[in-house]
Length: 314
Image (tube, helix red, strand yellow):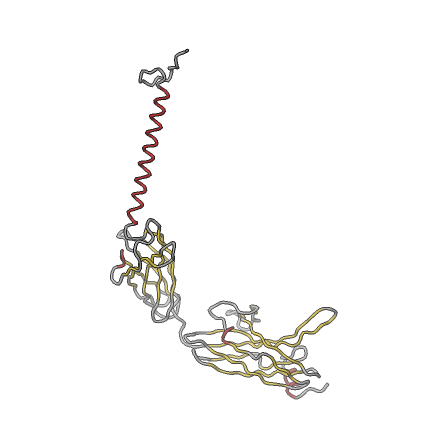
């Protein structure tokens, strides 16, 4: 079988598979956030008959300590901060005559606001072959290493939450990102039944440099900027409380759950009232039980408790 010059070159480069070859096998793409770029790969059909090829994509993971190590394929889309799966658009299929080559276009689109590196692979899939009731498919992957540029947003991590004796809350956080941040702190109390906000408390934070830490203080009752979005809708029920730190410039956000508090305009009085009522009921129960015990023991009618007394014989 005679191969076209492109096929012979691809086969000699080591990029050939069973029946076809792909070139190039790697792209390093700079694609700023909100822009699109196109890139071509050449597929050569090294077989002597026309073949239809399909396309797929997968996220992959490399080794930062060994850049030359073989990438680990993740089997499809893998939710992570460096996933490039959704950045790639591939053709449906292409049919190539025997010994011929065709170029197909892969589109790379970086979402608005994207930063840093993202990674995914495009696969060229050959037809499924049957041999002794065993099916096999040959495929080749093209690695796409895409860089949207810019600086990743700050990575805010809450390390400590302290309820102060004055009723306020102190939140300590670290900035594990690469830009300084001064987040806005918010504590929201939610209705445990409806999930709607009942009370919102605001505070202020100090600035944390990259790798540093900061502190947020939220006064009791919210202080300046506090607001209420509900009344006593959860009388007697503890409201769920959450603290959020949000960088308004980048949208970076983190949160943590706080101990519940009694929500509603007057529900804070209900807990002690219930406690008093239970104590009174318990006291009355003990008194009645003691009185009944005294009546049972005063069997001689003298009015005195005599553990040795017995009822008169008839």
